[in-house]
Length: 233
Image 1 (cartoon, rainbow, N blue to C red):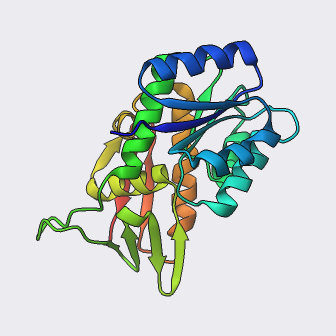
Image 2 (spheres, one colour; image 1 turned 60 degrees about the vertical axis):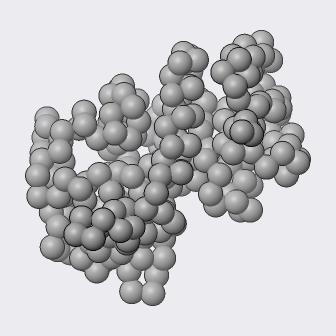
C-alpha cells in the first residue's frame, strides 16, 4: 500500500524537523519546504494527498500559497498551522480553502489526529438515503447536497464546499428538528471541543447560513448555551 504523501511547509527548521520525523515515524511520506516560494514547485512535483502549511512564512504566506494551490486543485485538503487566532484570520483561511486550523504550539498527537480526520472526511462516501440505503444527494428544501462531491446546488448554481462545511451540513441534516449539542458537533467534525475549534464552529455556522439563504424556510437556530437546531422544510 502506498504511503500518504504530506507536503509540509514550515520556516522554523528545528520545529519542522521534529514534525517531519515524527510523521515519518508514523508511516507518512513527508516532503518539507521552508519557504512559501518553495511550496508550489514541490506541490507540482509530488502531488501530495494533504498539505500542512504554516501561515507566517518568508516570500509567500500560507494564505497566498493556499490560494495558489486552490487555483489548480480544489480537492486536496489543506491544514493551516498558525499562531494567528483572530476570527478574521480564521475566516480568511477558510475562504482561501483551508479545511482545518491548528494553533501553535500543538501536540503531535493532535496534528496526526487532524490529518487522519481530514483525510477520512475526504474519502467518506456520499450520503446514504435512509429509505433505500443507496448513495444519493440530500434534498434540503430548494437545495441538493452532493456529499460525495462536496457540492451544494440550488437551481443552476453550484457551490463547492470544504470537507468540514459539507460534513457539518450533513450532521445538521441528520439531526434535523432536534437540538444538537455543540460538543457533539465539535467531536464529529474536529475530534475535540477545544476553544479554538468552538470558534471555528461559529464561523462555519455563519457560512452555512449564508449558503442556504436562498430558501427562507431553512433555519439554523442557535440554542444559547446548548447547541443548534436545524429547521428543515
